[in-house]
Image (cartoon, rainbow, N blue to C red; front, side, top):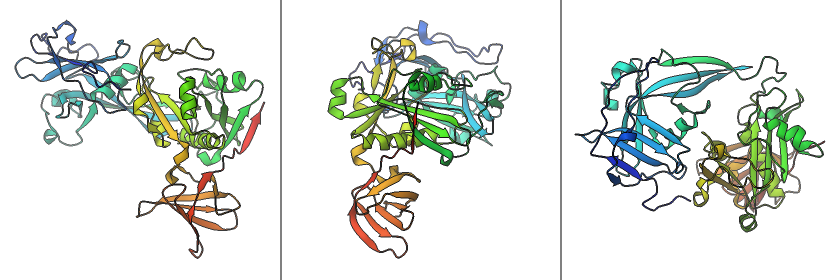
Amino acid sequence: MKSTSSNSAQVFDNLAITPEYGSGKDEDGRTFWPTPENAEYVSQYEPVKTKPIEADLDFKIERKNGNGNIVSIIGHSPDDGIWAPIRIGDNVYKRSVLKKKERHETIEWTTFAVLNIRYTDENRLLVDLLYSERLYERREEVSTKDDLVGEECIETVSAPVLCEMVAAESKTSKWNHNPSFQHPSDNKITRDRAYLPYDSDYNRVDSCDDLTFKEIDGEGSRKEVINQFLTGWTDNTVDHALGGVGGWKGAFGAFDESQNKLIGVITLTRHPNKKYADRTNEVMISRIACHPCRPKNTATWMIARARNWAEDQGYSQIGTTAGVGDNFGAIYKAAGFKLDENNTEWADGDGWTNRPGRTVVNGGNKWFKRKWVYELSSDPLYQFEPNDRISVSSLEDPLTIDSIDNVSSGDTEITASDGYTEYKLLGYSENKVSLRKSKDNELIDDNVEVRHTGEIQTKLHL
C-alpha cells in the first residue's frame, strides 16, 4: 500500500548549489546534462503526488539558480534498483509498432527532446517532450504549445512513469533513453523486425476465432509443455520474465488447430499467503505468455476463459500482479480487472524464493508490485465476449453470444442464440437483465441471472 507519510516520494530541492551545465554533445549527438549527484541537497520539498498505478519513486531535483526552473531530476526506488536521470535537452525515444505482417513487424522510433520538467498545482511532477523535424534547433525556441508549427507536437508524461520505463531498458518500452540500435540521424526512423525466425514452422494466426482453449494436465505437462513454452518453446521465441512454474490449480493453452500449434498459455495457482487466500477465496494468475504469431487480444481472450473456469470452480476472485520492467498490467485492465490500491506497494525481488517453484523477480531488486483483482461475484455484462457460452436462469439450454453492444441508456445489449432461437438480454449486471426474443421483442423475463457456463472446449491430457 502506498505510504502517505512525509517520507514517501520525498523530493530534494537544490536551491543553493547548482553544478555548471552546458550543451556539449557526445559522438552520437546526444546531449548530456550533469546529474545533481554532486550538488548539495539543502532543503526538503513536498512529496510528489502519484496516481495509484504509478511507482512511488523517490525524486532528487536540480534547479537552476536565479529562476528556480527544474533542469534535471533523478527518480529512484527505495533500494536504487530503479534509477533514471531525466535532464532538460536529453533525448528520449518513443517506440510504436506500425504494422505486423506474416513474419515481420515494422517498428518506429521517434526522437523527442526533454523540453520542460514541472510541478502542477496538485504537486504532480510532469515531463514535457518535444517532437520536431528540426529538433536540435527548435528545442531552444519552443516553450509552449503555442510555439509549435507544422507536425511538431508536445507529449506530456508523468515523471514516475517515464523514469520507470527508462530504467527498465526494455526493448518493448514505449519510452526509452536508447533505441535498440545505434543512434539514428533522423528524428523518425523505422525498422522491419523479424518476430519469427526464418526456420520457425509457425505461421501468423489472424483471429482469436481460430483458437481453441484447452486445459492442460497429465504427466509431463509442466516440464514438457508449460515450462518449455515459458522459457523459449520449439523456436525459442517466448521468454517469460519469471520463467517456469512449480505447479498450478489450473493450466490452459490457446491452440491453433489448423497448424496443430500451441499459441499461448495461462496458469492459475493459490495465493502464496494462506491467510489472504482463505479470506478472499482468490486464485492467482501466475503466468501468462503468448507466441509472437498470436492474433490480437489473445491474452485477454485467454483471461476471459480462465475467468469462466475459476468461477465454475467456486473462487470469488482472480488476482495477479504486474510491475517488472515496463509491465504495468495493461492486459489485466483491458480484461476488466481493477487495481487493488491497498495491496499495490514496493516488494522485495527475492521474496518467497525460499519455497519450491519461486523465482527471483527484477534481479532481486525492489519492484513496484501492482495488484490487480477481478471479482467473480459481480460480473458486469460488458465483460462477456462474442462466442462465450452463458447460462440464463429463465432458459433450460445455454446460449452462445453473437454480439455485444452499448445502448444509449448506458446498458449493455447482448444478442445470443441456442441454435434455434435468438434472444436479446438488456441490462448492466448479471442479475439485472431483461430477456426478450429478438424476432418479435417479446418479453420473457425482466429479472434473470446470467453466468458463464465455465465450459472448457476440450482438454489436453498428456
